[in-house]
Length: 293
Image 1 (cartoon, helix red, strand yellow):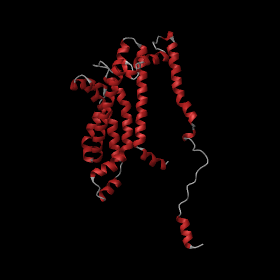
Image 2 (cartoon, helix red, strand yellow):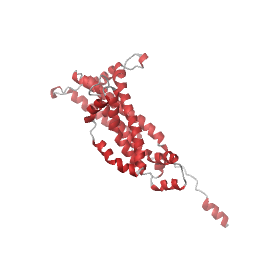
Image 3 (cartoon, helix red, strand yellow):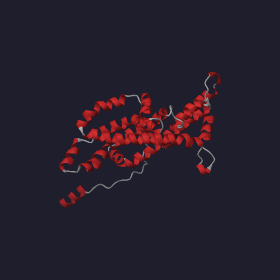
Image 4 (cartoon, helix red, strand yellow):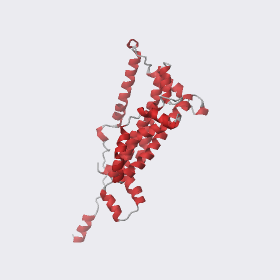
């Protein structure tokens, strides 16, 4: 065997081998077991709900699950194909609430990411505005509802601004932390190669901070639904929050629970859509971290 043959064998990359065994499910739990485990807790909750509704001597006015789901279908769905099988409550209360929550969330994303990038890049700006940021975060949002009504009047504006003010903080702090975690080495490398600041921002800073930014947006999204309900409890003539109060005042308990069911489904759907967007945008990050698992 010649020296040349030895070198060629040493430098030749090993051929990938295919495993005959199927990939082991993560955590050692198969798909059927995962489905059963995920359905177990909701089924137990429904059974407890049904048992509580049947306890007439307990003094609780709790409608049964079937009655509540049927009321939700009656309120938010219809048999009119011209309206997309949607009921009157969907157009009067559901759609305005969702639009307010999304408007406040998108406003919070724009402000949180923009200000967070500035404070994360500039140590001077971070030191200047850090006390103001912590002061704003410490203010309880429900207590500011009257202030926003006083500043912006009645209508959708105070509700949208209150949602944006309340949910901007996790986005802002995660953006600051994500930008700071990009690393001094990459910043120095960009300076050595004289990469323009615009390219550094779009190709190094934002991609490096995007996992933490998405984590902050996910937290803010669930908070936006809570603040949406709180903002609609006063000086509102529509919205899911207004519908909650009106059904409670009218002792319409099936309608009250129907709104709660719709809110729960709304949160699940929004979380599912956000996860799909996150997986598509951060596909590169999942691939990079999977190599280190």
